[in-house]
Picture 1: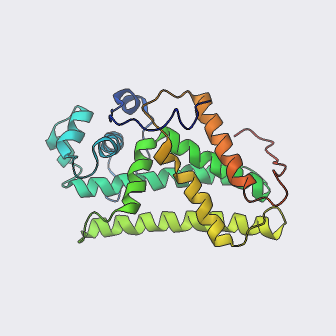
Picture 2: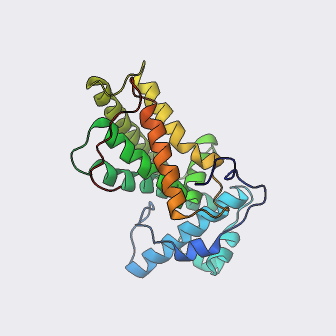
Picture 3: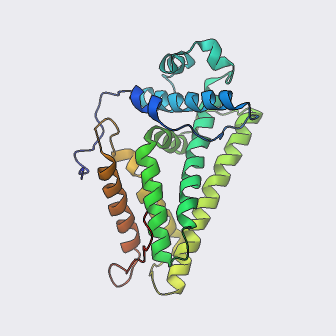
Length: 250
């Protein structure tokens, strides 16, 4: 198990090219028209590299040339998909929200579950996405804290609308589960809305303290996810840790 202190971010940014090369391709999550399969895979790889570049350099210091260098491609190949850095940035944020929605939906649909068990599975899945796709999640977090552009293009407005839809839908899902837990006596909170935002804040804070540059095994990541999910669920329970029916494997 990697402790929180051991995983604090280091000052020197590093780009893990191996993780880019070996990572599974994303589904098409961008806001423009879908293309043929090989180009979809190339664009997914482009989003992975862009997420890494924006995370290590920051939005202002990142150029399309930096992304092209990570991909081992030319700027002309990048321009085939994106004409501006801001369009690329917004699609990375869309991709981050898509990843969370995709994995937590699987957890939510894992059979008949009590509210504590459902929330546990969702929190576990959310945490694992952050740990495994850290660059995407870091960019998405920073995007919520800064308004980078005062005037948005039509495509960026559409991307923003999709991002907001993802976030509102996910927050509503968590709020409903907590409300069901309160109604059934599993949870006790003074405000379901505040509890929902506290849960999401606890999960997303991993992007602040977790350091992807430090080697972390799959087992260690799973342990972090388990303990984070337990923290989320136990914090809502009136009589200490509830009994979690996790009959199927996470």
